[in-house]
Every structure is written in C-alpha cells, then in structure tokens.
Image (cartoon, rainbow, N blue to C red; front, side, top):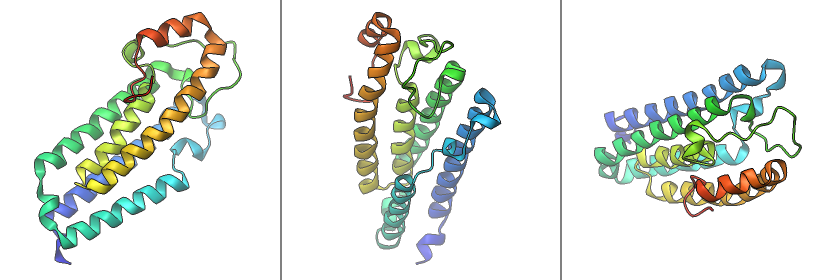
Length: 197
C-alpha cells in the first residue's frame, strides 16, 4: 500500500489532476471568451457521466497496478511520452478553438447561421477536425502517462468510436452549409482521427 504514496504515484497522479483541471478549465474560459458568459453553460466543461466513469476506471486500474505491480509504473520514458502527448493534444485542440473563434462550438450546428464560415486556415489547413484530434491525443496520452495499458486501449477505442460516428454526422451538415467548398476541403485535408475519412 505504500506504493500509493511513492514519488512515482504522487508525480503521475498530480500530472493527471493538473492536466484535467487545465483541459476543462481552459475549455470553459475559451468558450466564455468567444461566446460570452450568457451563451455558455457548464456543459462547456465537457464533463459527462461517461467521462467520469472512464476516469474512475482508469484510477481503479492505476491503484490496482501500482499496488500489485509497482514496477509497471516506473517506466519513465513511457510516462514522459504520455505527458508529451497530453501537451501536444492540448496545443492542437486549443489552436483549433482559437483559430475558429466563434465558429468553434461544443455542440454540432445543425442550422446554418449567417456568420458561420468554413475555417480552412491555421491548423485547419492541416487537420480537418483538430479539436477532435487534440482530444483524442490528450485522452490517450493521460493513460500512457499513467502507464495504464488497459485504459490506454479502452480510451483509444472509445474515443475513436465516438469520433467515427460524430465526424460523419457533423460533416453531413457542413456539406449542407458549404457544398462543393467543403467537399473539396474534405478531399484534401485529413480528419485528424486515425482511420476516419
């Protein structure tokens, strides 16, 4: 049980906590900055029941493994690689939000608004859905940083499945809004989520 209070556990769990606080806090702050306080709800924190459940199970895995197999958590090159992925995922996602500005929302727009423009500059010239790409990298990175093999694969599978359904749904509306302009864009720029066209 002393492993739970070890340097390794304290460092990894502190990094996870700080990553979560920064990710969700900055999502909310940027939503308020671009859309105004009156147009933003706590849903902009992006904390759902399924998300909390996933994080709970990742912590259960962590505590079981650090107690039974503490050496698994001592792979610093793996843990540091996960931390680097967290930072990269954050940068990609926040660049997406800042580049798109008011066009970036947490809910898929199903009606075209007059000021809604197709964003194809900045990070969007390289990745069609950088917000999703950044979150995918960030979420998997949290589990690599914790050296959680089960949760790493589970987070990757669940996030991929979510985006594999969400991207085509969102792009249905984007094609309605922007027509041939979006078709051409989608043909030349990858989605940013592996194996999702």
